[in-house]
Image (cartoon, rainbow, N blue to C red):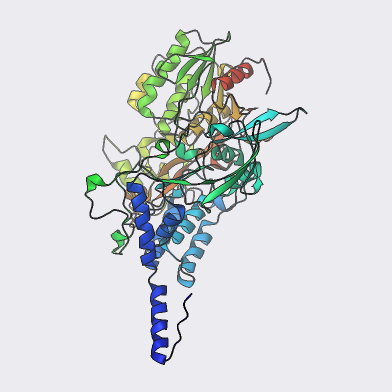
Length: 620
């Protein structure tokens, strides 16, 4: 270092001024980092972790925008989030999560914005996001349109299997399925921790999509059927939030190589679900922000970064191997290659437009002489709520309700909307409008509401007459002249726990009301596990609910879109008495299977095991 001798006060002031310039001009360094990120994206290369971190943290904190954002989030959650009060309570036995007092935590965040402002807009957004994440409600989250558009990939597929060692004891094994030289290696340590504990800690602290730790454990690892929505799976090695470190160290024990240690950097790409790439995060707020686009380049020259599958050899999107079942259609209907005459129907999501195909699938199983049915609903993110009514009515037509009762929050300003909708002569109401009594039937008899006051009821802040959706005329027509030979004893449900939203309502209803048996696959060894997750009832966004409710606050400002659960579903007993809130009811599966090195790749092996349980050849 060169030493400069100072001879005057002027020189001292000059040096102090230059030093201050260095302190107050960090954007120049950030701009370099943002340019490096932009350059890597245009060359279709992985972004350097430190460059992206500096870039993300370079956007200045906007106190007014942050305060308005917190106020709006608190308003919508306190006004419409059906679990706002319930979230503060301790979890029921079987669930693992922390109680969340949303009012207290969001109010505390708002106060801290004045007292100890965050260093950047990124820090604020991350803090807000983490508060919502603690709810472990897959329907309710905040997604920043700037900071959650990157994929962070380790280039590994880890999965958990249960094997038997020479002493006939069970143990958990994590396997690397991407680097062929590491195949079938046991992962001993991850980041200096025992491997199993590292995954459990990550599932506990980071994954938001289930209140059941075992389901989150499955989601941290690679799924058994890897063709579905990747954002819900392999979350330990494939993330959407900036990881805390630039790399992770692994220690393996391999059959041929012995002990292996390596450090894996994150492969950072941009989510190609969006057109182009820009990072003008604060321009809409009249702020000056660095752009990761090269302004000198025309829009057709801005390269959209490829997804992880074009950069790594990941097997995430490969079709699973099906060696022990015969395919009957394009990919969702199978007959097992044994003598049980057991059919398998894979339901990967719930869409009203698929209801005709669903009826056809059951008809095909009937035509093929199928005696038993396995419903594989693993890796199912949900869908249309009326699909649940259709499926249960298709299999078990009866006079009892065909779905769980549900409820919503009522506010003073929503009551006039309900009254107006009831008086309306509109023949084509919006089927998402929670405040239109004509779209619903009262529980349990399925009768239309006679008045708006009957729908509103007398309970404080809640509708008193719990209600369910009506089937559409087209759905009712599809259900005409339907007759299938199967009883509850002829059907079994198998999932890896991630059967969410509408899928959860279906499986819970078939299990609770019709006593269909259930199987959960994976999770931690020797623990009970849910077969479904977040059955809340219905998810929506603030702008939608505000429009229907007539709210004078129309949305969350800025670039932090909020989604939230606005209906809650309840279980009920044989006398149709409403019981528990399903979102906060622990419902473990009747039976349990585990992944191994073979069935993790070929789910038909799991179907064979499920068939043995279904046909009472083995007990759970």
